[in-house]
Length: 84
Image (cartoon, rainbow, N blue to C red; front, side):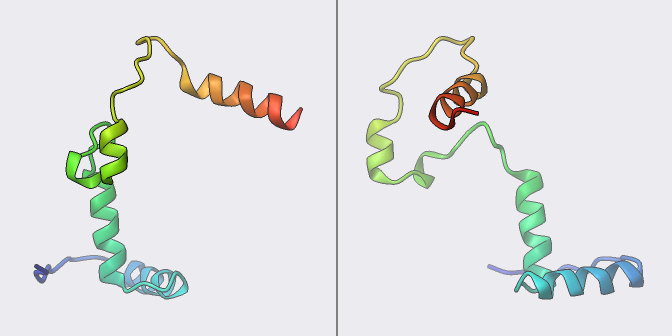
């Protein structure tokens, strides 16, 4: 359910934001809503209902040590693949 929200923002900022939203193919309201979603999202916990049934079945079957650096592993594998 959508609800109206009134914000007080400098006129110049509103104009710039409107142009930016138009360039991105969004309304200003959509852009603000997406920003609030981003700010309030708990990125470490994905709600069970957001996952597809196949992913839900697979979730938790692979166990990893607590000290695994996934970014380091990804970097190493990309270096192997692309030989950079």
